[in-house]
Image 1 (spheres, rainbow, N blue to C red):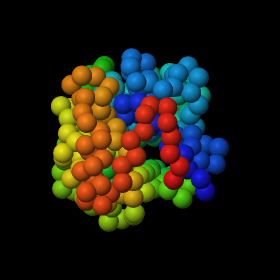
Image 2 (cartoon, helix red, strand yellow; image 1 turned 90 degrees about the horizontal axis):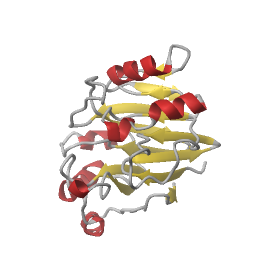
Image 3 (spheres, helix red, strand yellow; image 1 turned 135 degrees about the vertical axis):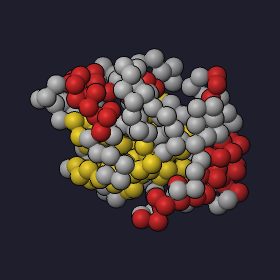
Image 4 (cartoon, rainbow, N blue to C red; image 1 turned 180 degrees about the vertical axis):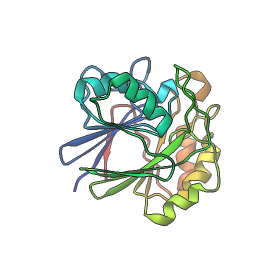
Length: 228
């Protein structure tokens, strides 16, 4: 089954398969690299890695307009549920939890970071492993380098790893190259870079470093997509 991954800028992606669209971290309003309009973008499911403003983004407005269920770590899910109201489906896994959807499944795994929403809700950051169609995608969210990243690839082969490379708020491109080696994904999509001055970096150098270890980087510009 064909799976298309669209890079929407910063850490936002959409994954499309069999007529379904899954949004991850839809930070579009206020994102100078945004490649989609929050007023028109489609969504069947919204998944969140954590609650910083540049990841939570337009979640509530998109979910309210489209009716898409939202899934996030329990404390963040609670804030989103309060905003959307009890008639809206909000799913609240914790680390290690897997949620089944009509398009596949998603599992929340550890990330090393911090997270407090703009409204002050403290929540635990995570990465998300998802199975969509015939592809397994690992969105690392925001994280530093840590050795347990290797464990994710022991359970299933990762077809695409979305890895932050910008530094300052996450690991930099040098640590990200090590992370790519630990995960062992078939392809790597760099995210969370060049959106703002503190996270500007050399994505071509990152791609060379990953290639030197036998990996493959697909550096998409916002608005571009790849097929898995």
